[in-house]
Image 1 (cartoon, rainbow, N blue to C red):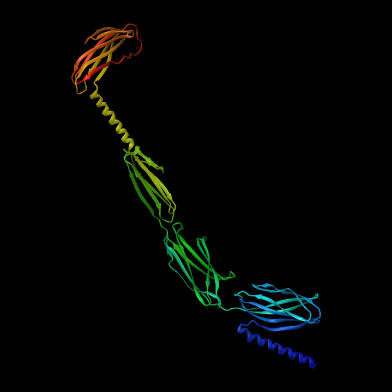
Image 2: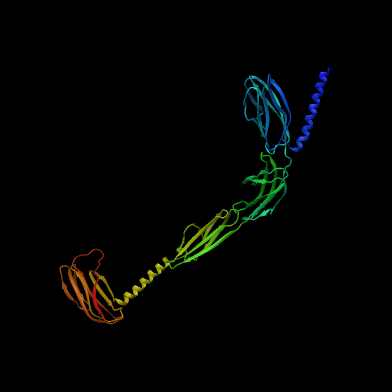
Amino acid sequence: MSKNKVYCNLTFIKFFLLQIFLFFVFIPTYSQIAISSSSDIFIKNVELDIPKFYNIIAGQRASIPIQIKNLESKEIKVFLNVFPPYYEGISAYFEKNEIIVKPNSEVTTHLIVTTPIDTRDKILTYQIYVNVDGIEKVYRLNLNVIGIRGEIKIENFGINKISFDPEEELKIFIEFKNTKDYSTSIKIKTEILRENELIDSYERYLNILRHSLSNFTLEYKFTYYHKPGRYLINIYSFDGKDNLISKLTFEVNLKEIRDIKKEVIKEQSFWFYRVNLFIKNIGNVKQTLTLEEEFPLIIRPFVVFENIEPIIFDGKAIWNVTLDPLEEIVISYSIVYWIPISIISLLTALIFFYFLLGIIFPKINKRYEKSEDIYKIKIIIKNTTTKRMKNIEITDFVPLLFSIQNFETLRPQIKKTKEGYTLTWKIRELRPKEEVIISYSIKPVIEIIGELKFPKPKVKYVLR
């Protein structure tokens, strides 16, 4: 082996050991520093200085210098590109992709690298493409990402109870601990299921400071609209990349409640009596009930059902009602007073006027009896008043179809007209309850077929 080759190998070994020494000395200090760089004559009189290694802490932004020296006496144009430009959340790009370098001068440009705060330890190798006057060369840059240590974990959790009545509130608390060197935000998703059916779902975010604890509290109220039975509460937590951190499952039970609330409100007036029956299902399941109301026989014709018609059986009104949770109905019926009151009032008025007319006015009655072709007429006048009837004048009329045969009692004054005969009797006085009967006979002058209807007599008198 020649001396030159041995010397070159020893130089390379010293250079490699120096790189390792700098790498392990400067990484623990979290310094952003190029560990090694290469200075290369790209083409004649053009020199590039590109680092081979570079350290960066997760969550930081680095500006890596690239130096270009133009040793020519003319201006040159340099084109720069980097690959990959984006990888696992880490982005890399040149602040300028096209650079003009004047003669005998140098220009420094920068490769910009950005890393997410939750990047773990890794080394990325970038390929940097350089093109000068159509001549292209590829350089490699090793990026050492130093991840921040730590994690998010559940420190403690609890639930207030596992069996609930409607309107009671479920409370679950979870204590998260952040052991990382930076603050972070996690997504918490809550699912509430009954028999594998999703009932409710919620999402919220929780911010946790570095090296600290933060509490998440779920408050959920079971209502009467929730079906009774077993419920599962799933609580998931995710990091910023939607990776699952933890999952907790709680099982609770909602009790079955069967209860009906009834309230009766009565209204009464002179004309009617109304009953309003308010029925409400205050349970958390559908319920069916039967209501009965019995009415005495005497008032059944006067009962009016206003909204829900019942089934009438054996003198009873029967309602079959089905109610959902918290559903309420009103059953109303009325007993109408004005109908029996009107009937009684009418009967009373008729009776009253019957007796009143009998007291104020006398009774006058006319009837006849037929014997062969002779009609015997009787007029009966009775004083039903409490006073004396005086100056009584009774007038009757006999059509020309008849001839007067005789007068069996008092003889009247007779006046003949074109239509017939007017008979007038005058009586001086009738005492209370006293009556007088006037009778006479008539005979038709022609044959009469059918029923006869004689005119009513007229009476004039004075009560004293």
